[in-house]
Length: 404
Image (spheres, rainbow, N blue to C red):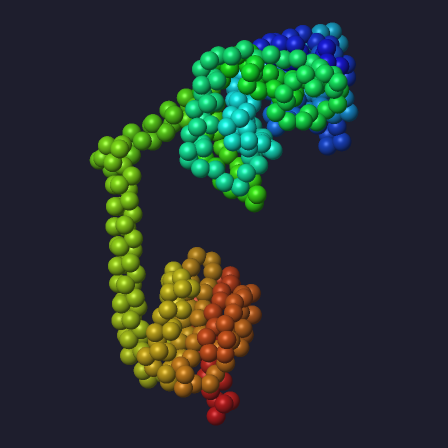
């Protein structure tokens, strides 16, 4: 089986010929082919599958299932006899080789300097993560590890790959115990890292180009660390530089002063937001007074608004009943295809506002909450805001007459 895995013989092979052993659908109805040999790496060990084409058809997934490597295709092959040509997406493959070897270097650096074991690895489309068996990391530790990793990359050390038996493992200072018991593949950076691994890697550490740690966070009793290698470092540097240049123009400040400028802007924004909130409160106070005067001849302040939030209705209602304990507030807001309502009563009144609101919800298939003195909620605008307010007003009057 190992002889059929071209990616182990030479991970730099970009195209190959093979015979189709079978073409079938899986249980989900997805087409796949099995070849007598393949350069397509299947998902495994934290590394994603290769993509490319087989006989011109796109390979969208590669999995090793029941001892066979299945190449899932965008559409079935029209011809399965004779030999077919496979073409690897080299950009994706080489990126995975850079990231995976970079992970070996980074994990070995953490173990060598601080004895932090890597207990998880994931190679994503944009970033790579490892999980470290420690509950905390410091900036100093990060800087030391990153420096050592990039030094090993700069030294352009050769990568050795060896197939060994379980009995031969004692000859090597492995970073961690291997999971497989036969056909054990060791990836070795001489005098630095000895590790069992089934992934694809570059032949020299220098091909990783560079390694940059981006961020880290504690997750329960481990630390998850994000990093990138190779072309991803160049690409992210380019993207970040583009953003920084745009920000320097927008902020009219050099890069080294940008943090202070943004801090000042945020403080100013916070102060402005506070002033705006104070002004809104004052406007609501004036509005509450005007509404009380407008409805002084009635037993309740009742109004329909457009596009007012439920929070605004609640504040306004509290101000109204706070200024006049003998009144009630029935406020409705229509916003797009929804209705919001607030029912509140002053401390000198006894009507049940929760019951009043609940009865109104039946008209609009709505829901809400509250208590006997203050209730709110909303629902679809199955009737107009004016019709809903009219119902609330009449219901309140009915309750008053009954209580008398």
